[in-house]
Length: 388
Image 1 (spheres, rainbow, N blue to C red):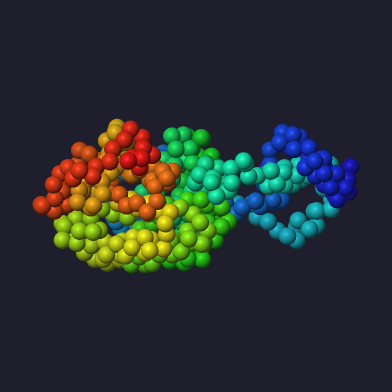
Image 2 (tube, one colour):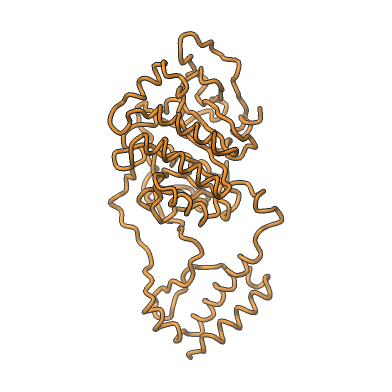
């Protein structure tokens, strides 16, 4: 039997919002199944979606040594995958909106009331400004350059049970970088793909995603590519745009830069800075970007990783160390770097720049630099690296 849409909706919404304990027993859904078997898009709580059902093997770690500036590192490898969604046709919805069944009206009322209840009962006892970045879905960590290998490693680590952070990944195309990646369910539920394109060359697109998601933290892991932009556009202008957006919304920034940017006469600098093409001048650009962050923000940490090594870490945080002064270099794996980014994000340190590498690989960036430098920082947890 057909029921008046407005009566059922208002009555159930009133009951459920008036008695939160009832509303809390129902799960909110963005889609309500109709009696005809079709799905009607009823609620849009944010322009983000959590992809499910990945069946392909984990993305590969490469068997060769590479820096983080390899060509195509931030290029999405899944361009041939079609994004599937649920189309919303306003005309069709208008024709159906006043002929809902009892089940339709009841489901709609539950979804609406539960959403209202969640919005009105949040936040928790802690003031919004004191909420730790990524600790809730309403205060996530946004990753810029999300389809690069480093960014994906950072996102996976942050969303893992070890870090337990809610993460929003962004890409230039708006595609989910984890769309075909198999991950543990607990990790996957904390990973959210922002469906609109975000380009670090466009400050408005960065500001938009930070505002829409309520981001409390940002990880800049974008890198130059043929399609995405030159080193100057990404590592200088893009970093500046990110700093502007973080300043506007009050988000904490962790910038993934590069070791040796302060040592223009070192071999590491010279080899990397003069690679040619869209990567030419990448070290110069990174240093300019760093300096813009320092001049514009107070709540930031700059992490300068060394050469990124293949494979995963065997000893985790016990294998790595931080340094300051840009005198010691080395290499580390992407998951080790990801752990350091996590430590940087959740630490209370502000306005800090550190170099990161595996202890077994450390070497002086220039012949005159003494190893060890005396500025080494070690700990048995990644956040603990920043307690010194």
